[in-house]
Length: 151
Image 1 (tube, rainbow, N blue to C red):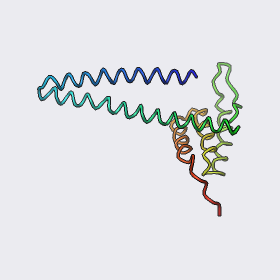
Image 2: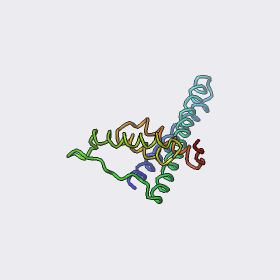
Image 3: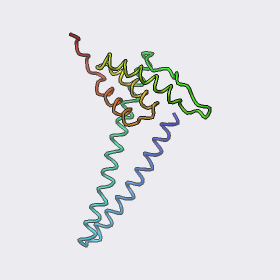
Image 4: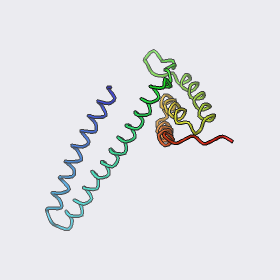
């Protein structure tokens, strides 16, 4: 729940920032000189890119949460079996062990979104965020796709 609140607050702050930047772009354009019109148009591009990124990221989080809820309902969410340091951080060797199992599980069932979801969590626990995101994107893409027949 804490992560959802943090995400919502961050998104709200970004939206306020986009409105402020956009209003400055409009003011520059309204000044009417060629230089301010060019700068104003350039400034307006930043909120557009930011809004697109925020939208795509929100879509990703929403879909990942839907997969987590479905997997939880099936009883398939991975159990936290990782050892922790005295400071509470995940022990790297422990994360590597779990990652090896999750990778093997995914190699055995490459068309199963559930294995890709669990692999994404293992990547995240191993502090490899880019690969965690790619694995989760793969799980999202596979979700709802009928498995290919073996043979």
